[in-house]
Image 1: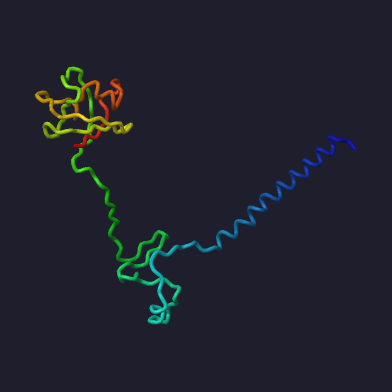
Image 2: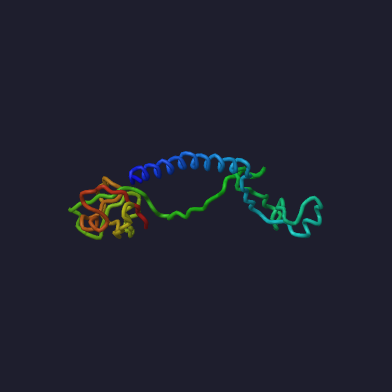
Length: 177
């Protein structure tokens, strides 16, 4: 028997099986998904035997209308909100009480390396200047005055190099004191 003919026959059989079997598998599997019910997760408490005894129409495995404190309605994770829960959730995010977001630049002619000029910060206050891009920080004292700064904080060039590159000035910073 010729090897080329046998190889062509094997390829033809594999192609025929693929053309028939793969679409049949998809068609047969497609019907099972449409008949299944969506899974619903119940959040809340489950009724105890005592609650089920009070309400003969409800079993001990069914969810109760309130929690143990009697205040929280049952919530479902199916995208619906129970009636009466129209208030949005409150998320507490702590904020630094004395902080300013702004920009920082530098000047070489500042006489004190530890000194800086900061807008909106009390005079002679120690400030932490944090670069928002790389989280590096430097501390300075707001004790240089007389000239209104062009940015929210003006650092000495040596202090500015600790938090960012001089060619990137002005940079986004957070001032805390």
